[in-house]
Length: 177
Image (cartoon, rainbow, N blue to C red):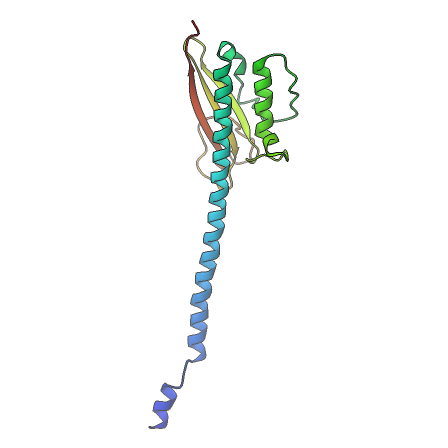
């Protein structure tokens, strides 16, 4: 065998090792980025499921107190889930609203930190004539920017409205007669 043929098959060169390391590192960085996005998506999903639980809770409370549904209406400028809540009200509606406000703040979690970031709740009266129609909304701060929601519950509470998430549910209360 000649000397030139031995040099060509002697092994990897330093350049080949560096190219392999660069390809490997690029793949690992992509995998780390994917893991970060998966964690963000998981947190967004968790917050959405907690909002659905809270919204169904208020729907049940309103349906249980059909005779006094008009007392449940709030406004976007005074959403529930903000400030101190004293739940010593005298009516079922005021107690329900106070307990829901506490749940939005995280009292059900035991720590008072909440399951959602900055949760706010609004109940809009869409129609006061029979059958009465309401829109229950829960808003919270998402982790990434998306399109700003059309419903104004919690508007301006999170800095950028593109990070505001909202879930709504319409309910209709039939005549009690």
